[in-house]
Amino acid sequence: MGSLLEQAIGALNGAVGDYLARTGNGLATELTLVRGGRPVRPDAASLRAAFPDAGPRLAIFVHGLMCSEDVWEFETGGDYGAMLQRDLGLCPLVLRYNSGLSIPDNGARLSALLERLLEVFPAAIERVVLIGYSMGGLVVRSACHHASVSGAAWLSRVERGVYVGTPHLGAPLERAGRVLAWALRRVDDPVTRLVATLADLRSDGIKDLGDADLRHEDRARREPRFSLRDPRHPVPLLDDFPHFLIAGSRFDDRLTRTLFGDLIVPLPSATDGRWRHDASHPIDGVAFVDRVHHVALAHDARVYEHLLRFCGDAP
Amino acid sequence: MRDLARLRGLLSLLADAVEHGSRAVEEVHSSSSARAFGVIELVPSTREHVRAVRAVHDAGVALTYGGVRLVTRVVRASFTVGLDVAEAVAPTSRDDR
Image (cartoon, rainbow over all chains, first blue to last red; front, side, top):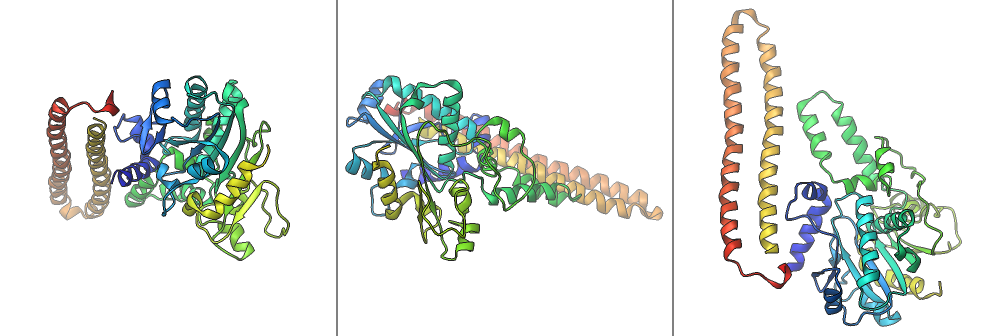
């Protein structure tokens, strides 16, 4: 029941979380670590109590839009974090956050939390593996960009980043929604304007997904345009550490896979532009999982095989 | 205490939805009726009667939607008092410290 409630609140935050935060609503989720379904305060005593098994090599898990940390759980129990702890000795830290806030806001908050962890985590942090699912991957990238600009110390501890079903080049569904709302607003009819107003209620987080905006200046440049072609991202993946991408596809046909991918994120976006539908050779640092839809990517045994390989290889 | 904060949040969100939703629907209602009355008022022989009907209609619309918002505010205030009382008597859990 508690888990269902958190899932419902996670979905609500994804839909209108910016409004909830702006109005000081008690349903707004704070960015926090969670363990066993309970928030963990970022102070030494709380962290020591929550992570008695703390080790020097961390795996930080960041969920996606309208999710809670429950998205990582397999139907049969367990999650990637527990499996990586068992197989590689990584200490899993799972994040919960308000996915309706803008991606740059969540990135800045994640960066601040990681900086705080350097000071108060019960074990000396040597290496950090960042694992982001869907929007979570963009939050990870935004946090890294924020840390790079602000000179945060935690960035030097990052060993690698793994992105699962992340729309690095944006999500065409949101771009289509943006254009639809723009067109509806231009129709001189009260009912149509009402529909446009309702469409515009979607959160800042959802709007950021259209072009995968990682910085506030990118958000300010946003225009109502639609293209199936993914926009090139103005913020490249940082050179400071290696990046690994896991992309899912629901289809077998190469062209359909390219266009629709896992039904939410097309393959070119999930692979940061590295996917070519006519290419036949493997792509370095990129793994594909067939016949899987977007949500299942967060708890799929085949995805874990790639995650294990990417996290286990020497950096 | 966190559950009470969430209950307050849910109450606030529902009240906001009714407040903003009723204003949006009222605007649609008023715009649509203004168009209809505007067309009927083009007929000179009935213009004065139509204007009287329109004034009554517009007052009724404002009263109805305003009433919905007023009742919502009263319900919200009542629940808030109830939650304040619950918060005052509820034991503090470990999460809240």
